Length: 462
Image (cartoon, rainbow, N blue to C red; front, side):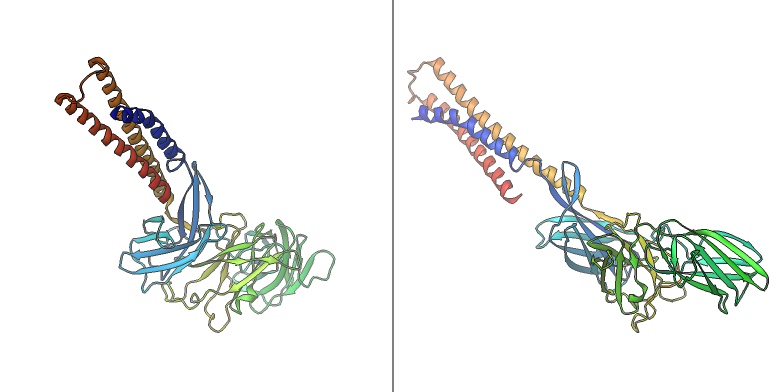
C-alpha cells in the first residue's frame, strides 16, 4: 500500500507543482495593469478651502494612461487638525473635481488620501505643503500692449482683458496724452487688416473715434487671424502721434463671454469642436474652484456651453494687504493640466457678485496651471511589485515542496533497492525510518497544498 502511495506521489508531485507555478505566473503573478491617482491643485498654505482635481491613472509595463475609475473618495487632514471629506465620480477622461470646505484656513502640512468607494483600494496617499511662491508665474499678458509710439502725442494701447481670441469680440482702449496730461476730443484712427473693427464704414479697414474727457477712445475688434498688425494715429489742434504694434491673439483660445458673468453664468465659446472645457478660478494665492463646462455645437460652427457661477466663491474674504478682495482669473483650457497653447486666464471681478454685477475688468490676462500635489503611482507600483513577489514566493514554495517529495521518495526507493526488495518492513529500525520518511513527505505535501491555496487566494483578491 505504501509503495503504491509513494508511486502516486512521485508521479503527481511534479505535475501538481508545475500546474501551481504555471497558474501563479500566468494568473496572480502575471504582469498586468494597476491603478493609481494623481492629485492636482494650487497653494495650500493659507487657503480658505481646498480645491483639487483628481486624475485616475492606469499603468501597464511602464506606460501611463488616464482611466475612468468611477466613484472615489478624497479625505484631507491639515496639520492644525481640520478634516474634510468629499466624493466625486471620474469622467471618461479620468478626471473629477472636488471642493473640500474647511472650518479655517490651512496651515502647515496637509495629508490627503484618495480611495475607491468603500475604501477597498488606496489610489494615492501622502503629505504635502505648498505656499504661493511661483503660483502666478503665468506667463501673463498685461493689459498695456507693447508697441512703438512716435510724435507730439503719446499713445498707449490697452487690451482690458490682456488678450484676444479669434474670432470673438473684445475691446481695445487707446489713451492719448501730451506729456502726462490726457487729451480730450482728439481724433483717433485705428487701421488694421487682420480684424473687423466694429462700426467701421470705410473700405480701408479703419475706424475713427474721438477721445473722452479721460483722453481715451474705445474700439471693439473681432480678430480674423492670429497675427494682427495695427497702426493708430491721433491728431489734436495740429499735434499728431502714431503707434505701431501687434494685437495679442492666442491661437485656439477659448473665449469667456463677459456679458454672461453679470447673470451669474460662465459662458464659454470654443472656435473648434470640443466636448469639454476645463475651468479653474484662482487668485494669486489660492485655487478657489475647478470644474468643467460641457460644450455642444452652435449655429455658427463653434462649440458653446455655460454653467452657473460656482456657489460660495463670490464674497470670499480678501487676502490683499489692504483688506480688499483678491482679484480673480478664470483659466480656460482644453486639457486638465492647462498645458495647451490655447490656455487663457481671463480676468473677472467679483465685488458685485451678489448683486449680479460680475464683469470683466481692466487687469490683463494671467493663466494658472495646476501643480501636482500628490502622485499615487510610485506606491501603486510598489504594491504591484509586492504582488508579483508574493506569487513568485509561493511558486518557489510549491517547487521546493515538490522537490522535497521527489527527493525523499527517490532516496527511499534507492535505499530499499540497496537493502533488497525482501526487507522486512515489520523490523523496528525499518519502521522508524519509514515513519520519518512519510512525515517529511506529509509536511512537503501540506506545504505544496498551502502554496496552491495561497495563489488561488491572491487570484481571487487581487
